Image (cartoon, rainbow, N blue to C red; front, top):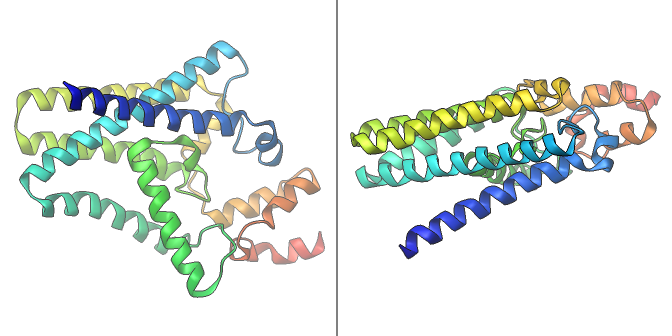
Length: 245
């Protein structure tokens, strides 16, 4: 019983931290002022905010449960199977980032150290999203909105694949049910947040495109100055606009 209690406690704690991070960042008045196009999805009603926080908690919890069970099931078959599934998922992410010219992270580090920093940050943030579903990291300078949502689908796909490969009926029902609840919870979450921010969960823009949009559509110097804080490679396409400003 003790290992089960310990595992359950770890899952719930991790899920709560993930939900709280997303909630606190979005509720921050400073963040909403600096980047109103991204921050502000939480409803103004305290009752609905509490409901949204609960949904974020459930998304993180279910995401972690499905992935943990999948990892255990696949590892029982072979370590190579684990590497193929979870390693393949990471490889796909990096391939997409590189092909879209979106590998460079926002941290202003350049040259070889910048490449290493970008790889490390992309890896850590992706792993965080994979296992916790933290909604804050859907930012275009991190995983990106559409890829964040895609990752939830990948979680379900990996879970179903692992359960079917094991063949146990109980496991298939548990993981299949968890996947269904996860997707329903996500749909309810999207229906609960401020309508204009639903698009941020399906945004296909790269970090460069996002920064350009933020600068060109900024309504204050403070908002424009935020663009200059990130790696200059992410705003070089609007260098002339920045010089003119």
